[in-house]
Image (cartoon, rainbow, N blue to C red; front, side, top):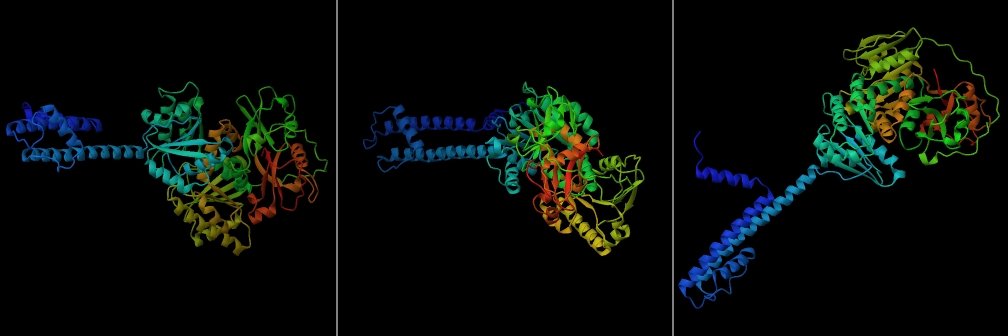
Amino acid sequence: MPTPTLNERLRYRFDVWMAGGTVALMGLLALATFVFVVILGFITWIVLALARDKTSPDPNEGPFDFMWGSLMRTLDPGTMGGDRGWAFRILMLVVTIGGLVIVASLIGIVSGAFDSRVEQLRKGRSRVLEKDHTLILGWNSKVFSIVQELATANVSRGRSHIVILANRDKVDMEDEIRAATQGLGKTTVTCRTGDPKSLRDLEIGSPHAARSIILLGPADATDPDIDVIKAALALTNSATHADAKYHIVGELTGPDNLDIARLVGGDEAKWVVGPELIGRITVQTCRQSGLSNVYQELLDFERNEIYVTDQPELIGLTYFDAQLAFENSTAIGIVRGETVMMNPDAECVLQAGDRLVVIAEDDSTIKLGRPLVVDPVGMAERVSAPEKPERILVLGTNSALPSMLTELNQYVASGSDATIVTRDEVQNIPQLDRLSVTLQRGDASQRSFLESLHPTSFDHVVVLADPATDPQQADSRTLVTLLQLRDIARHDGQDLNVVTEMLDDANRELAEVTEADDFIISDKIVALALAQISENPVLAEVFDVLFTSKSSEMYLHPVDDYVELHTDINFTALMEAARFRGETAIGFRRAAHARQKSEGYGVNLNPAKTERLSFAEGDEIIVLAEA
């Protein structure tokens, strides 16, 4: 290899210096200015000394005086009208022109540095200095519902902060959040650009100071679960991990990844498997019309939600006594150690350390009052109908289907069957003992094909959205299918029990014209569950029990199975009637309001216990009960 020449070495050193940034450029400019001033000062002094021009400035001035004068003209090129002598004028003209170049260069460097700094700030790479904030790592369509719900939850907390760290442009994220959310109140949303899987980028969001951390799978990832698990691994193994444990809640799309996620997150992370959650809620809702509105109210922060509270004054009393101890809250379960018992036996005695699971409008309203007295009223006799096989029609497929079929198998009587209509081949159909599954290829949005299925002959119809397509396109296909179903039912003079999954909550109001019984907005339901668990980690176990067939679930039963219709009573009468059947009464549903789609579709959870009530035909009681 030839030896570098002096010219090449000098050019290389110059390139290295120029790459040093703004400070290096300003240093180089200062050096050039110094050399320029020194040289011109000496030249001016020598020229004037040789010229001996008496009309020029004082020839007795030394070289340093001329250097100072050259420096002043360089930094502030001024008028030359007062200069005397052509030699001096020509030299000062050179100084002025050089000064213009130097000052222009300085302005350019400062302006470039300012623009570069603004660009860096725009990229969102600066570290967040908030404390007690909610940190969201990752970005997908659920982030808007999560931000909206957390802002609602934080109303009573005062000023609060949400920090979002994702591998997206900071300004784009902020613009999308402003467009998709409203009424955030005192909640501030700060976006930062970075890779949640990177140990260095994680520090931008200050996870060690966060109240809770929500992990979302990137919308553009081929396997979002891998990104979520890797982000959890980076959090739990960070060198700056706080002494206190993190409170992490993560979203998964595949139940097969749950075991490795639990291994990585340990006891610091709670996990929500979206397809499993949607499948379970869909199954329960398709067999209990109106149940989706109950779940919607329990999961959002606008009206009533679930809390876990310590009430040491109730230790030694029974579970039913605890129910009667609240006027404005409703007890629905007990947390004993690591075990969550929903709808325990009414005579279960509260022990030291037990906490109550209650439904309340806010944690500030959970207060004990004077023990309620059960309203004496004759209970109605309910005769349980014998189980019979059911027929279920499922239009469409997605990742929630296997979980939905497994859960449905736990509820239906032996001999039940499910017909699944799909345009593509279905994989991973589980082995079932009570439910037989029939696959049929076809397009559910086509009228002729739908009519050939005879949908009115089925007990339940479930319409699933396809998340693999654009959400708006998927919801449009769902709307067409619903309109076709409703018209077929009207033509046959039959009623259809239809449960519909949609992807975008904005399409729900439009879809209501189809008169479907229940809508499940899958992305929003998962987002609400993540937001709730981020505020209270115990709710992960509560939801796990509540949304499965393991223990007690939500049911809507005719109210006349419990009390006489058109009788003036209060809610304690329903509580007593439910207790007699081993259930927990949590509210009621007015049929008239449900038909009018008003007042929460008739759902009234956690009613005032002493308010006088009277029920009509079609009204239902909402209870926690075992199947």
